[in-house]
Image (tube, rainbow, N blue to C red; front, side, top):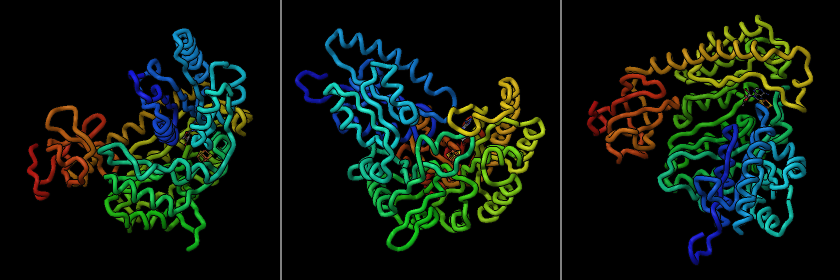
Length: 459
Ligand code: 5AD
Ligand code: SF4
């Protein structure tokens, strides 16, 4: 701590897993900041450490316990120096195994489930008083209220922001822990979302990504009737300063006609859609409780492409779900070939205790999963490369976000979420410019700013 300063010691938040979790970690960091625990880069410099855990895949709880073992040592060394360290565990592992964590790991001072982040100040206070609070209740909308950013506060120069509009999931896919760890679907009140968007726009944010575990299931029953995601997009399109709208993650069953039409009619809704399908085999989709067939997914994709022909599609896949045969896996490969994805995430099935999938017969051997995943990823990588190569020669709007690695370079995103590097002045950061894509790189595109924008291209 600084000499004579009243500031509390540093805060350190470690994030695991999914995008919601990364976003939640930034909110936790914000709450720590509000308590005077300014973010530090290393746990060694912190006075409060929060591990924000994700439960969706892998042996997350084991990882947390091994990490806690290391932090316990830091805590012991600190105690000897008379500098206390508070340790908290947050997130989905906390929700599922919080009591067990407190019982097994004496170094943990507090536990916060994903619905209870806003109680962090109270948890810190109680922990300092020697209690070991366990906050894991589901508390619906209260969470959204307390996590609201004060006066649209964002980092200086921040151009893109996440806004949580929905939490939890009612879909109960048989492999997934989310309905158990994050609870039932809750949607945030539309006026709150709009007010947050306006505040963010005033602070200079240009692009919003609306977040939810089942974001297109968004449904808020307000005074003027039900708000769907499509209606929310229509309203958010009117917010001055916000130029781009994105959303993740969606379920195929909730991809309604109005939302598809929003991709056609609202220019601010970006032509990019993350729409997990998980498998291309009907019997596996049924066992996963996805509630649609492969053909229905393909028909949906056709409809979306009819509305917005240039849309970039992304997805999630699981290989080696219990009972998956070679023929089922071939069906997944065929679906990938039929759709042509711009990018995708793919995973080996991981058995999650407490989910129906964990109890199923026919668990697939690890090496079979490995081989299938490698084959699927090779195809998805080839498609991503093809998608980027297909952008060469095209003209597209780029929102410039930062300087590049080399002097004179600036970097932004295309509407399709590709990273685009150009030679250009830093004054363009924060604005959208039309660029011609010149060549693809391994992870990004190289472009040239088009001269008719009043800025000379130097490529
Ligand atoms: N095993 C493997 N992948 C999983 N996912 C969710 N649960 C599991 C699991 N048990 C993947 C799904 C989901 C993404 C966020 O994580 O593909 O869409
Ligand atoms: Fe999990 Fe399925 Fe809900 Fe996605 S839709 S969060 S995979 S239960």
